[in-house]
Length: 317
Ligand code: HEM
Image 1 (cartoon, protein in one colour):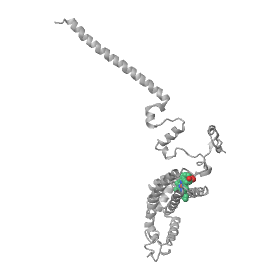
Image 2 (image 1 turned 45 degrees about the horizontal axis):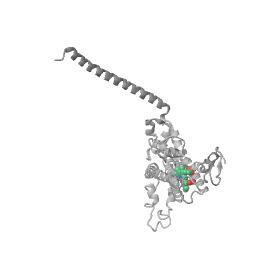
Image 3 (image 1 turned 30 degrees about the vertical axis):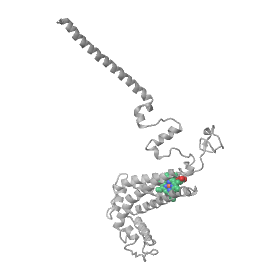
Image 4 (image 1 turned 180 degrees about the horizontal axis):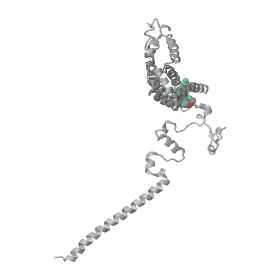
């Protein structure tokens, strides 16, 4: 039979062994955490090497052409832009920036328009009162209304200037014929946005402008009762295109409601869809037209073949 002290020492030995093990594990853990803290501290110096950074930006951010292109292609916001652009084609002196400014104004109009919708009711009783209320009582109401109005005027100007630039630079030619047609549609939609918005304050200016404008619709070929072949097709003042636009034969409550719905929902939606198509086509047609690419002097050192046009880094030739 084993004696007691031996028994004790064997139990005590077990306990000491367990304690040693726990202590060793605690030391290992402490060492591990210290190492980790040190590594975390180091990573703050080079955040782009951390896993967190790599999980967001999936490619290296150094200056090689391949990685610059990859970082554009692998980012949901950047990839809307082409990976490479012809430096000369995006010069303001070439595009006048008019397409971009037109788009920017469209965004401003959408934003201010939605805010205006919080205060405006398209009814004969309330419409004009809402405008007065906006002008005199709503905080920043006058600013809001004027931002919308001025942006609308500006958009008409910039869309014409953009068309003029596209025409001057011959950008309607092959392969951009289709995009020119999309552009013409955008122009019509922009003018219609302006026209339908004009009636909404329900003031004298809007009322008479829409009266004159829709009177012209009487003379639409085939669809207007005074237009060529209109009568032959059975058009009368009560079923022709003017009647459809106004929701009646005079400019009244129905016309206001129709103008409101076209202005706030249908036309902006169509314009947004066609703008998406327009931008997509600009890329698919080989980017913005523009003169043949030029290179910086620093880039042509190792270039073989004919000497390309040289551009000074400042952008001057
Ligand atoms: C809401 C109206 C419009 C918007 C927002 C818009 C926007 C743009 C933008 C951002 C570009 C890129 C180049 C630049 O900024 O000049 C562009 C190019 C172009 N746009 Fe428009 N545009 C509109 C209306 C029009 C109209 C009315 C036309 C012609 C009738 C048109 C025809 C073109 C063509 C052909 C190009 C390609 C030009 C090139 O490659 O040089 N666009 N548009």
